[in-house]
Length: 114
Image 1: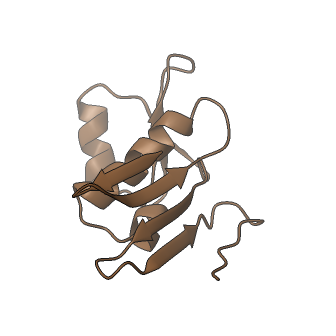
Image 2 (image 1 turned 45 degrees about the vertical axis):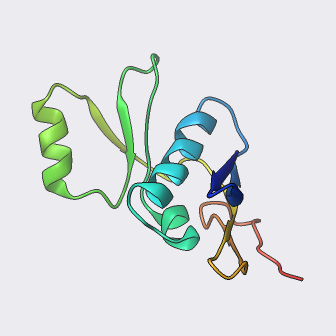
């Protein structure tokens, strides 16, 4: 997924896998744009995922107990799971510098520069 800003490429991110690709990439983009996180912060932030089966809201460790309680009070069946999704991303800084982030959820990921 490529995200532009002021007519220029600003963020490039992607995720392997099946049903979690969309929510993983979306959370990466939302964390970067809406929450102003840099590429490393957005990559490392806890994630959540919901799909039809199983009918539960899967969340990673890292969400506050208050948040989980509020979700349950709203009728969500919350299940805390191990790592979900994996991303490889590049963000372009204001000066054109490239910042890469490999997801720590995957032990084989690596960020390298040139």
